[in-house]
Image 1 (tube, rainbow, N blue to C red):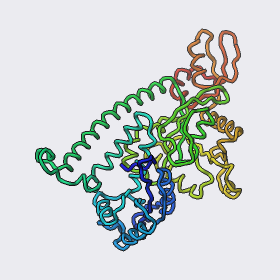
Image 2 (cartoon, rainbow, N blue to C red):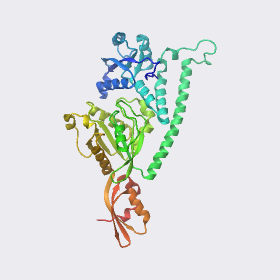
Image 3 (cartoon, rainbow, N blue to C red):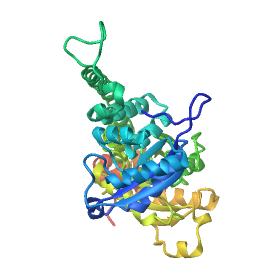
Image 4 (spheres, rainbow, N blue to C red):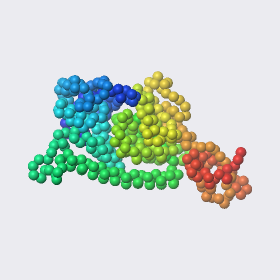
Length: 428
């Protein structure tokens, strides 16, 4: 993979960005300008200096060059004029297309997927994250191996350089397949461990709330402000990659687990989604989803649609959800006026203490179910303890040998344990 982090020995990537808008892209509803804007941000996040942008509209991609032959010549001239050493394409290229473009332009050729994978590789810190990124990189590389420069596709020459009937390319493929199998085995172990943790949380009755949203919407900032979590925060795409869970205390004193997930983006690479599926599926375990939106973004609506599409793909679209329109402090008045209002749509700033208090209250109200009264025999301490597990005890009164509890229930907990209490409910 391309490394774009600056060191004394690195030559900084100076790039021209290329976007091809085909009829197929138009039919999918993907916004090419939003995608191109993101490509600029991705490139800058990876430490690339963006020199120019080239666009082309074409019915279908060129099988040899991806863009048209005339546009290849235009790209070559632009690269010479600006002194570029890299071309970054906003769509995915085949191995053959990469090879053809490299030979024609004498430039490093990168596509959107490779750029995102490179950023992820620099951001992964946990063992699981590192495994997931390498697996995604190799899964991306394997079908394109013949296009990754001349060295990989050259036959071995001379004594000791050729395997028994294998070319270097075949050896590389076998090595990558073996490494993919090993990474999948390691990831399966991590997934099993994660599932054990999930099961432990289920049995303990831990309530989970997941932060989801477009990358750079402010999820990590919100996690830090709500829980004092020590997380990396920066105004750039994919500033944090590994999911972070922290305990959040609600106004009643009840504690829930708040988890920050990896940010979504338009055209998130398939290999990346597949490799990170175990992490992303933490959302499926959540009792409540907080969808954090950058209210100041001119592409707000499109970004929200991308998030909902990925939640649907993960099977989490039906989860109870609250939308937090973040960054209201930097919005124009007309931007705020256009936002929907109500208990499920909050206009907030992660830096406003009053808004943080409101979020905690809304989370508590959303997780709370009905308020019921239970008559528990005085000698049934086990049921009294259970009431404190399934909700918030608002009041208790003694009536001869019984205790009357007025309880605001937690929906999820009561669904699990309520059957033990059903016969003790006081009918109004």
